[in-house]
Length: 338
Image 1 (cartoon, rainbow, N blue to C red):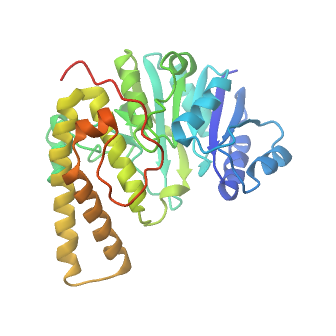
Image 2: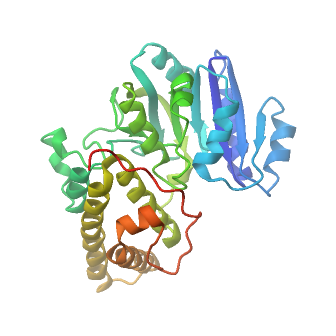
């Protein structure tokens, strides 16, 4: 088997039917399998897939295990030389998977591979990003990403001036569509299940780099990701969960000093934006602005009150009135370099 395509599903009937149809219609000259790992859907997704796509293998998890655990269940069932992690709200275009696999075959130095990810209107989504660092966080906090034009030393959270039109090594690729060599993926143990929401793919790609392989970007393959097509509001509960996983990532890879340094920088980052929205609120009170102001206020309060090491080592955190999406994981082992 050349390619195993793992698609996670949690009540995604409205989009996964289009996703699977695009996979089969746009992938002809490749031996592949599709594995849907279902996190306890109750919207008829599983029955529909069995009826319309009987060739798809379904792993029924019977509960919402989250992105990492849910995908790991599909990875365990995969047998392909390459394993593609694909969101259910994506559409394959112009034989993209065949192009991505051909690119990987030509680049044995690569352990993971990304491709162009577009919005429904054809605009670029920035799926490929530098790996997070405290230095990059400082650059982003002060809104000085333009310094990346001068030197990669100033890279923050995106590659400025680059829209995926050329191949290059990247820090990590968005988990909506990232392909890895199957043997390496299983050697690394798949996703770290202590990341429930966000930073799962960031952590995995960092481990690919640490294993001596590269994460490479293929510009000729493109998919559509429907999830970012609107100016949505990030629910406060989810914004806090991203904060939790950001601390876990920095603690895991940069130790206690990284987690403590992150808190200082993130208070600055959120504080600047909270102040900016306050200024805007003086002349406008539209619903989106009010929501963003509230979200930044809660996130700022939570980070201000947080003791990173108590949170990471004992699971203790300020009560902002928003329940975590998942119970606190077992203690992460910090990096040796502290």
